[in-house]
Amino acid sequence: MSGPPRLSVRNIRKSFGTHEVLKGISLEARDGDVISLLGASGSGKSTFLRCINLLEIATEGEIFVDGEEIRMVKKGGHNQPASQKQVDHIRSELGMVFQSFNLWSHMTILQNVIEGPVHVLKRPRAECIAEAEALLEKVGIVDKRHAYPAHLSGGQQQRAAIARALAMKPKAMLFDEPTSALDPELVGEVLRVMRALAEEGMTMLVVTHEMSFARNVSNRVVFMREGVVDSAGAPQDMFGSGASPAFRQFIGHFGQA
Amino acid sequence: MDIAFLSQTMATLIKAVPTTLLLFSLSVFFGGLLALLIVWMRVSGNPLLSGFARGYIFVFRGSPLLIQMFLVFYGLGQFGVIRYSFLWPFLREPMVCAVLSLALCTAGYSAEIFRAGLRAVPTREIEAARAIGMSGFLLVRRILAPVAFRHALPAYSTEIVLMMKSTALASLVTVWEVTGVAQRLISQTYRTMEVFLCAALIYLVLNFLILQALALLEYALSKHRRAPSAAAGPLPR
Ligand SMILES: Nc1ncnc2c1ncn2[C@@H]1O[C@H](COP(=O)(O)OP(=O)(O)OP(=O)(O)O)[C@@H](O)[C@H]1O
Ligand SMILES: [Mg+2]
Image 1 (cartoon, rainbow over the protein chains, first blue to last red):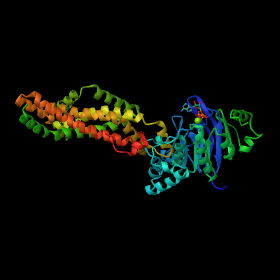
Image 2: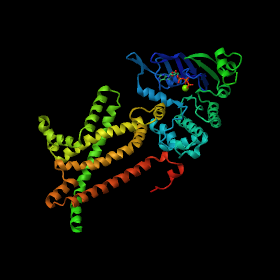
Image 3: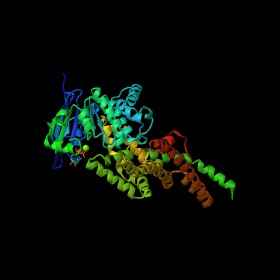
């Protein structure tokens, strides 16, 4: 594969006060990589994801998106992004999907999807609407485009949130437990959409507790434990004989060991 | 009942309604703008600005509007800087003084109402906006302000109705709005009951219209909270 990695994170550290949550994490995602991030609750998975699109500011470390380094400056001993403009730009290139959907409740589904392209990317509205409808069609909720988020099921809301992220034509997508807030019978519809994205070659970083997704859809599994990468590798190795004892114990809880 | 006197009184009072409406709309407008500034200071995170905003809100909510108005009307001229400044020809006008003090006062209340609205914007929705690359004024314009305004509207409606009633105080600094004209009529006719009843009726009608307009606005802005069928249906009334 040529060109810079879509996403490159080097030696990220993050502390909340005296509590160090991330203790030096590095990760690289090349074009089309689908990486599953696994780990027990509190191991720092969300914090790591949020550091990548700067919803949290890493205490140390370097982040490159498509070869562009996010510039940091030290201010009063703390790391700060050097330019809000660059932060906004980087965020517009990374699609984020949250556990709790986080749709804008005062906007219809269609308005949610065109909001970014129209107001952040400043693209022509008519074009954005056509694209948004195609995206909603793709995730299977085009008939709900004029409904408000509160009138949709969790699975539909999450699919709308994925469409909203896709509408920005992101270089990579970050998913933070996209199915954890869903009733079990709604998990499948969201995973199907994510699987289709993976097959289309979208670069994805997915925090998940869905072992079937990690095993069957992703091409790399990263297991985090207490703020470090405990082990990482291809799913067949990780779920096969090559697993670390800690990972073996972790997946044991899911009845998959 | 003296129908002739009542209708004559009503006719005289109605002539003062434009003045009342002018007082009301100017002070709601400027008070609203000032409130936005105060709210911005209050939530800026800068201790100096936010301290000033807190002080402002405390002073204007904590003291009687009538006294604020007297201080503006009789007090400003005592300051040489103001008396000899180019602003004096304006600040000498009773109308300007009344609007100024009404606006200053409502800004204190409105700032707190807007701040409560702002606090009701879900953090998650703000985060989603940041995550697609919104910040600064764009974030305020597209997400914070619309959501905060919807939340603030019921309390703000009350403040607006209070403002309409507060315009009556302007009569005490010689602005000839409805209450002022009513008092002048009373001093000529000594028929307190009838004249004040007519005046009260005018305020009731004005506030009724204002409340209807605000209720319509609130209805239009809360589509997302209604059941899907009702959202498409006609206005229930
Ligand atoms: N804003 C914050 N302030 C202080 N501590 C925080 C903050 N956010 C996260 N933490 C702490 O950091 C640690 C890691 O949290 P994080 O949410 O990243 O874990 P996680 O792996 O995503 O867990 P889960 O599976 O429960 O979502 C936890 O101990 C948490 O309490
Ligand atoms: Mg988490």
